Length: 265
Image (cartoon, rainbow, N blue to C red):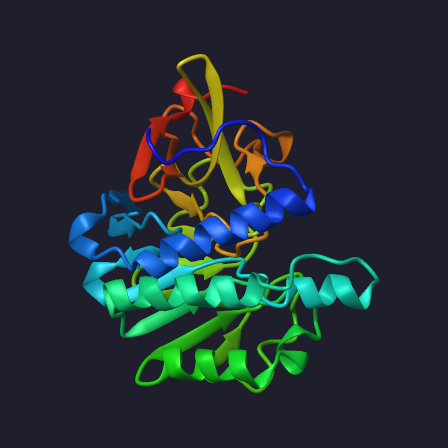
């Protein structure tokens, strides 16, 4: 599993800087679609592609889905007196540029927590606003409202919605909790930032992942300074049929598909 990093994520500034620079390097490489190894799966009868950069592509509908961009997170922390490296919005948008160039979608759906707080869209610098406008040009763009940004994407192209039924699937920010297995069909959500851990050569390797049992799918966080919640965490209980659950882990240029029973805690 080349391209994986070992150990659990930390919240130190050094880790954040390394993570941002690594993802910027990936974006700068502009890996062509033919050179990546994505994972194909089916959610409630709909064929989807799990891209190594953490986006979901629906070929039949030429639609790209991302989740939890958390744009302007550094600025949100700075307003509270906590300093993070100020590169998060640029890094996230650069990666989004390349994944959009890779798939050239007609529609983009961003599944909530698009901004880290309610004021992120309003206060975002014009240079980043222009980048989003360029990405959205000629495309339909849907911003799903999240718990961090429930008021929509201020002054940006596209439509803000709480939920969206599209292409045979239901798109929302938070997964439906409390429903019995089999009751939630075709739901695609974010919010939980799923990650998974495997063992390789005596090392524990933890990566962000797509999580799906074929009936629902939870997206990895796309933002560069977002953490992850392990699939075996109690917050994930009841969401999936573990017999059918597969974690599609993000590697440097490929996705690694691992059944839930083969994951470690």
